[in-house]
Length: 209
Image 1 (cartoon, rainbow, N blue to C red):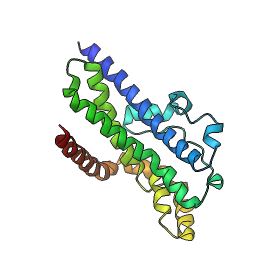
Image 2 (cartoon, one colour):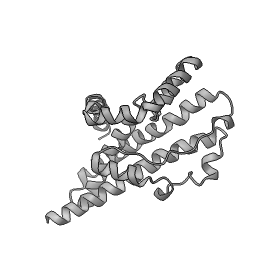
Image 3 (spheres, helix red, strand yellow):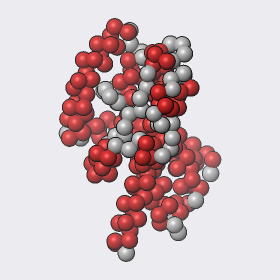
Image 4 (tube, rainbow, N blue to C red):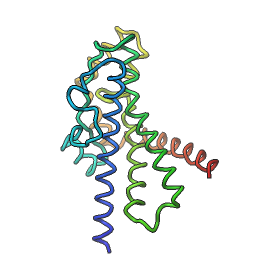
């Protein structure tokens, strides 16, 4: 029973990770495409096929360490129709917003099915999927390059300040994130926000059901 449960949990987690990061990256590419940028489409990234977005090391890190990454979707703002800064903000927020929507939908299905206790795999998948999506959304909103939050924040700054902010911090971004993760500082930041989001979702679902 222990082995069976372990395998079920492992497969459910892997599928949840692949689907969450695939939808996240596809959302970036789709919004960019709608704004006039064909780069992601031309490179075959407007797809829900996980293999198109998979970064092996990033996926393994997410499974082992609880954080990770996919291959970034290529975006060329020079193709955008209209304001490029606003366009980059829309592209950047599309990924986290998609994850929040997926989290709510998974939570809705989980509650509607009373946890699917009779179907262990589905129960495990939905539990992992909603959790991964909300954490992926909040983590990516941290305003440190190369995370989405840095580009969203840059959109609110004067162009000269935004340029200095992105170019100065970008070269140290990955190192900063590693330090935050290793010393559990990200948990102090993420957990209260995640709990707040899940509380709001719970209140909404209680009104529905």
